[in-house]
Amino acid sequence: GKRKFGEIQFAKLRIRKPAQWDKKWRIVIFDIPDKSFKRGREALRGKLKQWEFYPLQKSVWVCPWPCEDEIQVVSELYGIMPYINVLIAEKIRDDRAIRRHFGL
Image (tube, rainbow, N blue to C red):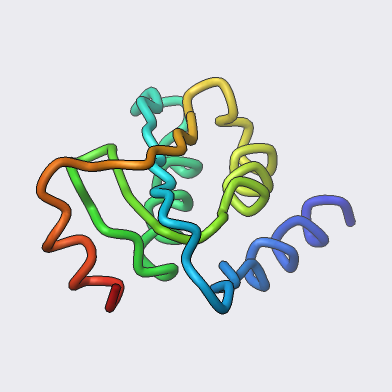
């Protein structure tokens, strides 16, 4: 029952866009071990793509909207919390492509 609830919660996860951008980037970085946490890594990448995060590098994704709670839910559900970090930055050098991606 607990696992089924987690799967339903996972499927419903959405990032809410605030009316106005706070001019801060959320940068999700992760280094998840391949073998033992493959399912969790794939689930995280799938959600980042679904939420339209911008892939800065293979394991570095960017979003302008608050997303820390949603990332925490995914990481707790799949036991990958120790391998993920969310940074909040005010500046990314040459962010034109990222701004264009998000329509900012």
